[in-house]
Length: 445
Image 1 (cartoon, rainbow, N blue to C red):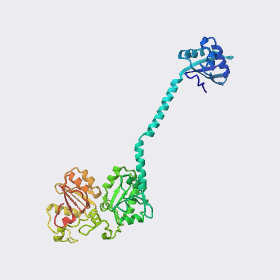
Image 2: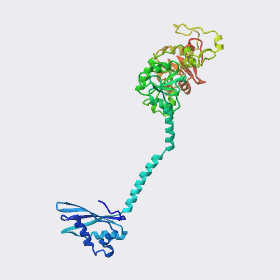
Image 3: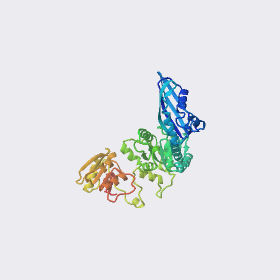
């Protein structure tokens, strides 16, 4: 149903019901005829329609089973009072053609209000879209430039065209990830010595690179990431292992999460002790052949010294150490120290022998009795949850920085392990002993 747009102030809507079959012309004629002279000369419908003060009368009729029902719509440009009088005059019509009929005014609607409401709703939609499009324009621009630079930085390496950062050849260290998205995420954080294996089969290019660099495997925290890591252990040389949090992927990590995972990387020997996996991919040549980074004054390449430290090997002796007489070797079959030890160290030596090759740890209480046992991989969690006082920890594994920090927090004064891993800061109140220390003269760190 269409209305005359020239009469756009008010709109009268009325319902019509007739006891017979009628058509639209019958209704219009009845309205004009029965209101003629009723409302005065000023509100005569014919004159009002000729002058354009009311629009075309629209009628919609539906006849069923001998009865007719429908709707009448009259647009008006009169004022409110005149429109109300005109609407009430419609209800005086009681016959249409030969049939009795009734007209009831349903509403008199201010068209301007409805138009205004439509304007408001449309303005809200337009404003919301405008704000959404302009929201973060500067950030989007910055991010677009950054991503463009990252895409330009990512390269392909080797005959397999592996996704990689631009610093693969120049860097002494290498980070190996799973796929292209992982490489892009590390580039976003400014890490450019990264390469992807692109699948579960480690490419020959990555195997060759691993022989001359300090390699960190950085995999997802899911089952697939574990399988790829085991493949790397069997086919290439690894120095450190970093894993994304459980259930997460490297490509999803924020910069803070990614850097934290790399800071918490685990030396390969310690990782193998914790997981029980085996590394069969050691194919590195003699260290002298890989001394691209220069040699130390003692003739050992810098990378060799670094890798020895990462694997828990003792540092090279100073000039004074080389002049001192070498310690007396301990026979392999010996079960007790060659030199007398204090009673507490003798006790720790015996405890260390009891957990040898078992990946177990013992927490010793104040009265030198074992207060708790735990697998080596769960030792740090066991110490953090410890509720009773303890004086020592004896375990078949590598002494790490994190273990020493937890021991100091728990006021544990002695840590005894198989050997020492990379330690950045030695706690003042924690003594460290290894199997080598207890096998000869006692030596505290």
